[in-house]
Length: 544
Image 1 (tube, rainbow, N blue to C red):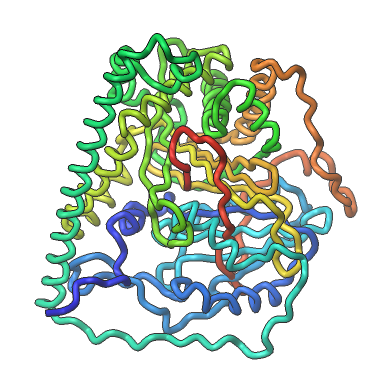
Image 2 (image 1 turned 180 degrees about the vertical axis):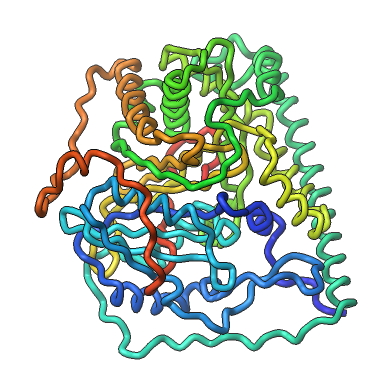
């Protein structure tokens, strides 16, 4: 009988991202990084190729399951060529608006499944002697936290440039496993399915035990409630909180103007806030970084949907937050190790201070109710469905209006100190989270070197004016800053850019049309970095 453990098989969660993907809805984890100086295509290609022995999976492509049974597998690409993965384009005017347009064009396309599912696009000609790099990898390969952890394999903590080896690194490709016959493959698939069912049963009992333990603790807290401090009451939901908030959790999602089936192309917008300012607000209102970020995202959506003619009274916003379930010390694992927490927030709370409090109550309630574990259990149960049925269902689900939430917001903790690529300092890093189904907007936040970088992904038909989200987010944060008693906020201008010949002002101000992307000349793999968790988060660490 064949050995049933096979680390080349995709997990059911990883394979799901393959099944859901379709034209107009690519499912990639990505970022746009801005570096000082000029990074050449040849130098970057050689550097990336020299690092690939450290990441064998980046030389593997997806292979369909034999006989259509079981999960897809990773296999080494016999025609691997770095030129399929590292490309370059050159800007006409050198503006950030052009970079956003090119990034949107790249991220609107699907990766070629004949080759390993990652690539790297250098954007030259950016004003101020800078190089932008769009990195992307398929979501079946890694989630946001795994993607961030990979930066350590590509970047250095020092600006010192180490000489590259003169000879191309030798990479030993393991011998291909002998082809299995139909009976062996059927046995393997059956054993794998049985393991997933046993795992689901184990998780079901664990969640049941946690819920019972929480209920017992809740009864004890209720008896001693008069002795609780005001701050602790905010984090220990009462039975009244359960009765009041549970209907929100179970209510159907109320669709907003941007909740339409994604057809592509995509637009990508971004902005940033000093991390110290986020932490100052966090301290002033007794919240967490996650809760402050959720507050300004909610306020941003309030402003945006009102500008689209939506009345907010009585409406709810459901934000799904991906949550890391890797545990300690395993952030370098590829693949997806996430569950999801749906947070339902009233859209008609005008006071930002009250909005922070409402979000704190809801995150505390969701944690005490073990919602993340229950959602993870649901995902495990889905994994017990036979693979052919999962593949068929994924193709259908991606094209029907389910309305499970309004948007996804993911918060990825990044490195706290500067990183360098070939001696070039990484000065900015904007995260990208895919959209799909009826999620016409999604948002990600990545913290890096003292700054929180926000990235908005939008379907052009759902959100033709993504730039308004950038402005609304900054305005919302400034108002929150004042609402928690920190006074008028003085914003720092971005570092001055050494300008070359100034382009026509009217052209620079307008967002350029989505350009065509150059054909591959040489591409590389996604950037990655070590995550430093934020302090005192109510929910587990969010990821992409």
